[in-house]
Length: 298
Ligand SMILES: [Zn+2]
Image (cartoon, rainbow, N blue to C red; front, side, top):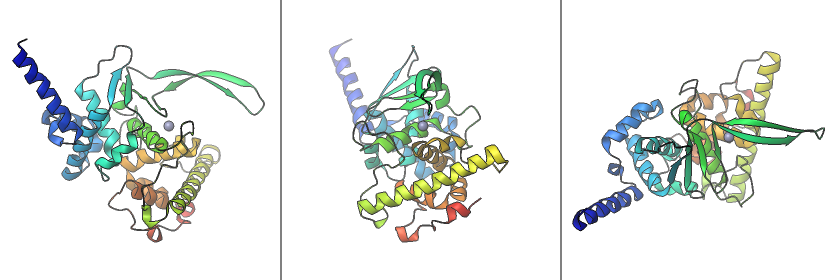
């Protein structure tokens, strides 16, 4: 290749990366963007303005992250953008500064199928159980985020029912952002300065109390359903595993069907609204739905 042509290519690559980095939506080719929107019903429900904001975020996200495929899976622009668009969906109202929530890692690994991970747990009687767990995804402190490619395209039972693997794993990353190394996700992410007009300590206490109350309510409903024939809660039963999983599953639900989540957990949903700067977020803590409504809701 002639030197002139090589320099032109280098320049084009550098120019594209610079446009991606600063969140220029046009840095994502129109045809590619349309293909991703067509593949994700969630994106079709957004307003055009929201989709443009998301496209800008996805561009900046792609410039900051490094994708790789396991077991020979080839990563192309479509696969990477499909992940980027879903990962950025919760951040669409906060915009580019919120991408810092994902600064704790760079790598994203796509597997061609679900991953078997060896697990070893000791029960209360001191008996050690060893088993393999099928993992659709995993988020670790410092990264990488691991995702099973077939699940990136949608849950086996179809999208739109409250599940989204990509949002789930990136919610764990939001939870771990700013935590000291070794401190596991606990459902309490770092809250933005002045969140709901509160001092940091009060904001954290409000978050923790509301999370705990909503989590306990959900656990109770799951037990009532599984053992006593009560109605099944809409929020996935997996959320009853731990406060960290409750937060991650709630983030999925908040993006997929905010109204359904709000019907089950109004106060908790309002906190998520405030975290993600949703247009329906309360202006201050005083405007939150009452604490009792979680327990009273169906
Ligand atoms: Zn999880």
